[in-house]
Length: 463
Image 1 (cartoon, rainbow, N blue to C red):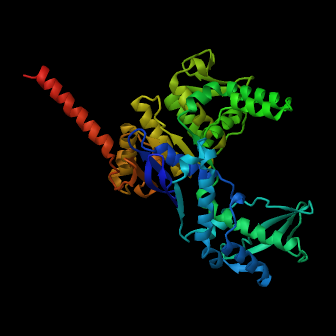
Image 2: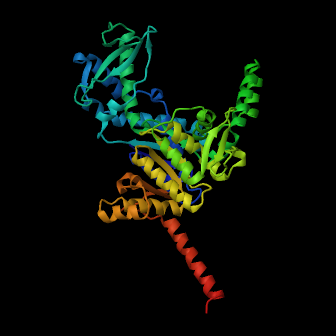
């Protein structure tokens, strides 16, 4: 799925292909990279059930209900996907003021468009996680039943799922209540299938504010809990509104979600399928381990401390604060099919560690975790280019991987990446070849720095 935004903050127009496993935004400061990331996050985290059902989809749902065995070919749904995308885009735009924590008038001229191809929708149907749409008589849930013994998703079948162990075909009487409910369920599921292409198995945001979040998350949680308790004890509407304005701060959705996740992240105990990447981050970069004490406070235990004396995050290096939440995510929450949205992963890192983070992110991509990132780091860009060159299917490339100490699991193919230069109101997709990609704004500055250094040296110290 691709999304296009126009007239959003400093951006006149930008288009991003969300199908790419590794998406990289780069460009000068204040060019709109964060705005693009937040629009993508708004799209992925919106609730499909809030989308207005377009007329063509409602007609399709009626046709499904009246068809023989209540089954229709998949092609009948594919023809109305463009109208569903229009409805989703309209709802995303309506959410922007709340998701950006900004006045509505900021987005008056903004437009969002979504585009998608028919390819792969059959698999998306089977991969979609079914969620209840509505209760009927408090017992029956309207759901979708897709027989796996059929050809992959070639037909859609409406069924009911009892709260108990029963699973039956839809056989309710066609009374005034059941028919609209069934048709709404069909339309809702169709919207969910289309939205699934953007959402995947969930997006997890790590904004640049993650350092402050990791350090002050308990205070943020305590302040909000105290405010809620005070509001619940106060029956005056005027006073409630006044206290909300004085004591509550509105954050963009990506930051709000990061705060909520930080509050409970360390409570998870079970390691996930990508937990070894968290171990690698700790061993190769942090030289210690992130853990939580009995008071649910994050701590860092350095490897060099033989007594294993823990340090609070406030006592730890900025690198620890920057990567602590990423370590916890990879250890407990990360799964293939999710999208990691991270702003400037190089934050507070020495160049050698920036290269190591690039390799770990590439390895995560190869294991099914999708990444959407922004960066200003020439070191990370050059390391991604190294991984692309080493990803060639040739004996010399494989020999270099071993000679230079790279992990074969971290090499990349050019088609895995979507790289965009955001600059002067435009978002330009960059060509990616077998040698990687070039970021002109960074390369130009590096060349200028080298020229200036050479001129200064030759004029002052040269013979």
